[in-house]
Length: 536
Image 1 (cartoon, rainbow, N blue to C red):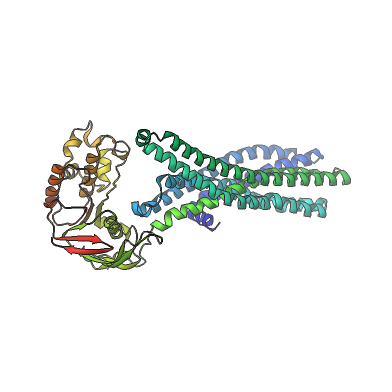
Image 2 (cartoon, rainbow, N blue to C red):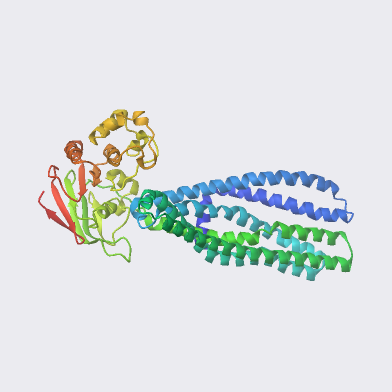
């Protein structure tokens, strides 16, 4: 539950709309309870018809205002939560989420947050209403019979508080299974859609369908369990309400039909009816608690803390000093005491086979993750003391698995330099040897590309991503396999252009091999967690 309270604390920026919605909801509840209770008094001959004529329309107006205010507050709070989650994931970039599946992340971003939409509307507001009704019910019951008042207090507490807690405990256990089963189903479905061509080639449609159906059955099983828990709690709540009504009717039959007794009868009916949904809401609470934990799991491991006492580098020399690093505690170390330096303005190549740690080194330099031991400095300052935004504005990066957004060519390029001019865009495209391709598109820079750069070949998309990186004004460029997807002639032409285009910048070229035409000051070979200098 502590993670759920942490989520609620994230909504503090919306205190005004959340409080307004709660106040209107409680006023609406009070009006509704009063209408039903006074209706009972009116049957007993009390002169309350004038008040009822006033409260009736007021209740309708308050009910409408409550729906507007509470739903508006919920949508704003959930929007803030989605932005918070996306920022947390984005801070870790691709490295921090590298051991999670895209379907699982989608489940956290969509399904887990959707579960939380019931926290305010179905739990907090009704719970506040129950706390408002409980003393009133006991007070009116005491006027009729003290023993009855105690009984009503106990029954109402069981229905409005105990039943939701029981449901929450059961749903919390099952909610974890439901969330994991839902994420597994999304993973399987996305895998099938992404690899549909290979599935058909190998005739694996039946096996893939069976795997999806198995995950679907696991999800339905968890949901059935939650529904059973919620139904049991609702039955307990309903039973308490019926026993309370029976007790009031017995007192009325024994003591007469006075206005106070009739008022209590209708008040009891209204009170248990108004809080009847809390039992089922308890199941929502259990799922929401598990969803909150999953959201923090998605964010916290990927977000190195911002420095308490930030500092700015005096230059752009990049040094790794005795760095030890592994991606997870149960994985072997990528680096053990690695040390190397990259002087300002130098051209450096990092070579090594797959798994040697070339991309991990880039992740460390960008502080997408942090070393277990040792330190990394930029301009003599530990990068842990440099604000993340400043660090990443200093280091431009082309990843090995870069992404093109479903947007225009122009928008994809401006991601690297939002204020770039038209001439600068075309210059970057020329340097990446993809300008002719963009000119041939129907609307040039304003041509819409599909998801992942659909409409371009793999090599063309790679060159467009390269142009985006070259467009950045960062004084350090880390290029992870920049020639992947390029033919030999285009690769040779690009490297020749890079030698000229990156003049004055530090260039770190990550590659499996060199062509021999690169203009390099130093070559480092990564092997067995260490860096060994080679001739430049």
